[in-house]
Image 1 (tube, one colour):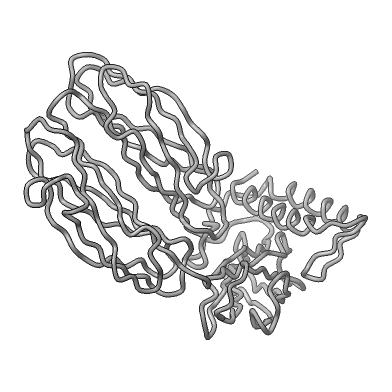
Image 2 (cartoon, one colour):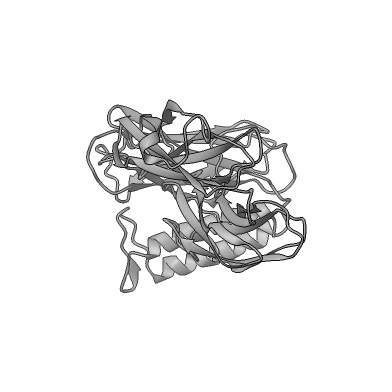
Length: 415
């Protein structure tokens, strides 16, 4: 089966599973007002089996499941089929926002294709949460992509995310392979909070390095969030001007995003000294309230006995499959013997088995080696959600001591 068929059949199964979650007795009663009995369920199952058999002979089509626009693939041979894909949008506080559902025709047809569409509510209420729409899409010869645009009505009510359905019908010139999909209205009301998180870095022998601080929101908003930051001498054991450069500024987290970062320049030296800390304060938030205004970053001394520290990275989760979230494990300086350290993942705000694959093991540094990478596999999904965090903990060092035993990796939501 082609990758395109795999994706669309998986989408069909996801929608069917959602509808069946409201099952009661011999039928399926769901908020969208559709009642699917046993006969209808069997009919859909038979239809999907037949469609899967037809898809086996179709060429692979590389359609990005997250896309809502873009250029159209070139026409190919085979029976044209229509697919409507899921979508999501922040609701906003007022006015309307566009919830855009891509409708794909694969492969492109040599003649015109038309299909009717209509919306219905699931947990979202027509006229209150969104403006119901219906109409006809027309694909000109060679065209493969059209959009159904649903106006979402903004409000300031604190409420769960809400769902609506788009249904295709009455196709001419093509068959309907995936005729129903779900749209999510993402609530962006309620208190928005911002938290700052510190990290660690080796100081180096000369020049400067960057000590990174992360600012995290508890959920996305329809407007930007800004917050001022400044290094704090009273909260630091490191000395401003000698160990780090005093820093002030303003961080802007764009609408729809849930994290941002800024850095402090660390001054390298060759003095044997204890690890030092740099404190950073957040002030004057706009669009959010502060929950943790102070964060501590660590300058790891790399001039005395060898030490081991871990720093986290970030990665976009993707819509399906897996991506690698890197954690860098660094030895402060080369040594003439083997160094080992154990590692294990732990939940931050992400959940093992659902958002990422739990991992543990041992990292070995050969003589002279100073860096190693542990990649944690992140599970892709199409669920709108805040950015999530994964922890990596180090333990049981041999041949060195631990200076930074925990790091935070960020799974960036891209839905």
